[in-house]
Image 1 (tube, helix red, strand yellow):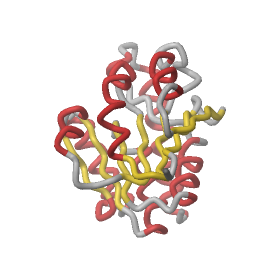
Image 2: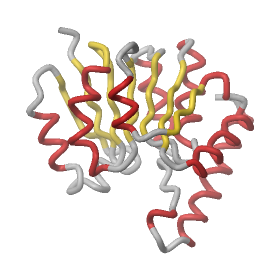
Image 3: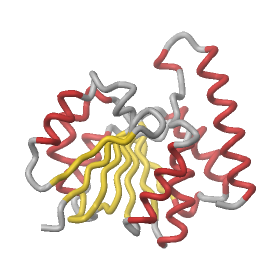
Image 4: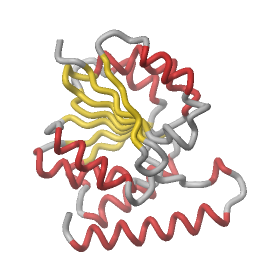
Length: 196
């Protein structure tokens, strides 16, 4: 990552953390990934040489910028889904300032509706950071859209472990996937789809 983008991301992280500390209503917080999670997501993306990348939950676009920057090295492209028009607009401005608009397609739609119509592309890499109550229902739609050998990364696997317990049990019971949780940021669950 070049110095300009890194400085820009550092400023975004500081600004949005300050915002969240002043907002009592959780629904109004941005709750971005932690600064140490960004490089980790980027490393994973490059390790699997991901070209087709899906992010579920854009928020301010902080995590998207990490993904899109890493995708430059793989000649990849990020599709990011968001349901809030205001947050999508904020993210769009951040993408433009980071010089990454050409590597990102924004979709303003409920994730389940979009997944139901997205059958032509297999994704190499999925970053899941949205409404955790939806994950169990999303799983049967999401897994078939991930290529064999592809990776799904789920945020908040430690910080919100209780909320993800049913989802984690579902993943563990699914044939053909392997999962592990690592203590980076708020905890990242890595789900690898087997090659066969």
